[in-house]
Image (cartoon, rainbow, N blue to C red; front, side, top):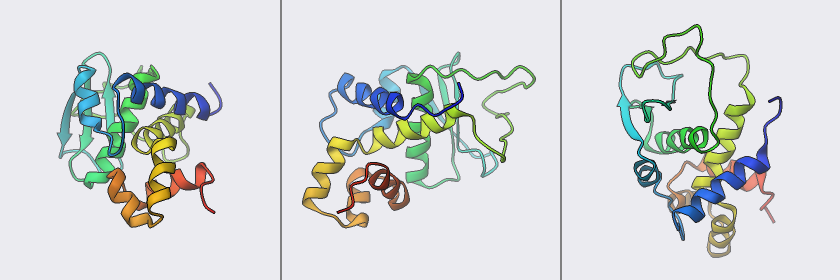
Amino acid sequence: MSEVRVGLARQAARNVIAKYLISGPPVNVHDIAAKEGLSIQLMSSWPSKVSGLLLRDEKLIGLNAHHSHSRRRFSLAHELGHWFMRHDFPWHDQDVTIDNPPAMDADGKPPEEGEADEFAGELLAPLAFLKAAMNQNENPGALAAVFDMSEEALWVRILRHRLLK
């Protein structure tokens, strides 16, 4: 895979919204993980540059305990993106466990990471929910509170969907 499949990632998130009959924000990503049989473990031993990790075979998602609530929500949604989009990573030369996450490459991200980011944004702030909320209030801080996400992540959604008037 060489390019981020934005449309596929957004549609995968919308399929999850439909599957779990989610009718409005904020989306309960912990509930989605639980319904998928995934356990979540907060990790206080991870370095700050590691946000989350999906161990598919163990049905386990690790999240960095030192990150903010909104960052952990986005990281969980991101890992759910890997889960639902069936991204598998070749950890051939590494012994990856919850206590030993893979080394992160600062030079660039593989397309699967971009897809999981797009999935996460769409899961936390689906376009239909975002449009409806913006009709009621255009204040970014208030909207971020409605979607239980950071203002920065909300701005990314607004800009990617070209919702500014």
